[in-house]
Image (tube, rainbow, N blue to C red; front, side, top):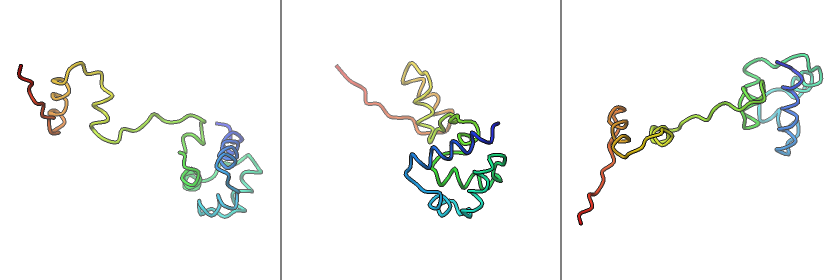
Length: 112
């Protein structure tokens, strides 16, 4: 992991969001002088709690700041997970919902 790239990503996000480092300091709760000292030295990563605070203030995550890669998306609900499964039929979807203890969607039968 390259410390310089961590701070480069911080720089990029600050510019993209139209922030100043003083605003980042206020939003993260980290003293301005601490941010600037670490940023200008490039040799130090912040403590984990400060990295988390910076990520939160910049609306990103620590993984991105450290690696430059976004983590895989999180699923927000079982319905979201089921929607991502490669399920061929509504019956298979219902089976998965039953296995998870979720209500099965009722379907109206179509009579000819």
